[in-house]
Image (cartoon, rainbow, N blue to C red; front, side, top):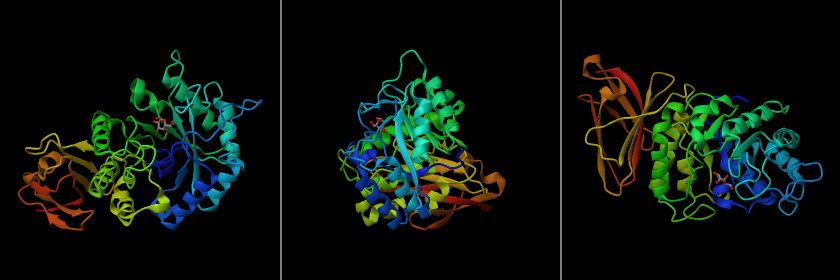
Length: 376
Ligand code: GLA
């Protein structure tokens, strides 16, 4: 299946881990619709690890845990589809999944067929317990082929965390997104770490196969499976802004049944989602900036209609100034042009003077602009 913009949806892992069941999934589907998430683009509801029994059946098929999913997976898929959402599941390229349930190794075609029969639209494919003698590229190509030939459109979401130089071969599989980082945790340090891991990988993002910086922690506030210290709302706002601007898939990880107003506001920023889903899917790039320390990140990206998206991210606990010269985005004084920039959180508009942008940011805060090229 070909997906032309970064996938969006919800995944059970960050908050629920192994504590998943039919009731939770039905309530989540209801809550996603009630919050208007599908309208904003969040279309996939994905069940992560821990959904099956520990053994396959006598026909080598995976079996949903009847204690968690008493009516089987087709019933879950039907309910999710009845809400206008698409349904995602999880497996692994190894003998076991990361949590120790049966993986799809040497069962790729039979599992793809099973997922298709259940009505699955999305498969996250992990990399734990894989064979040490078969390189990942062959395992992901194999499942990619199995999905492409299973008779149903299933989005292939590769999750090998960037291991074994994933960026060099992942586009030879049928993957529409690939985990370019290790696992996220609900702390500011984890967000900073993943952003850093991503820096060398910007050139590998692009139409049809998106760098996946992992599921969002927005709105977790330290609760749930990967909840540690938690983050503040301003940190969640900056986390969401970076993921959006860099073109990562946007998979919500909090409990959507109990989102705060601030969480809804962050996840529902339409301008940012429009930037994230921009049809050109061009590579984002880092600006050097002027006197920018390691904790002041400036990223830009050319958009489909000639606009630029520009983000200023203060990753530190002190207020700081973000400065850059328009030469870095391809403009400059001699062009006779400048930028008219509209900030996506405050709505503030500014016209850049003297080819220099200079903005003060509160601790952990950010500004993201959609900028138009205009006459000086
Ligand atoms: C790995 C993945 C996570 C999650 C867990 C499930 O750690 O990277 O996103 O799927 O496995 O066990």
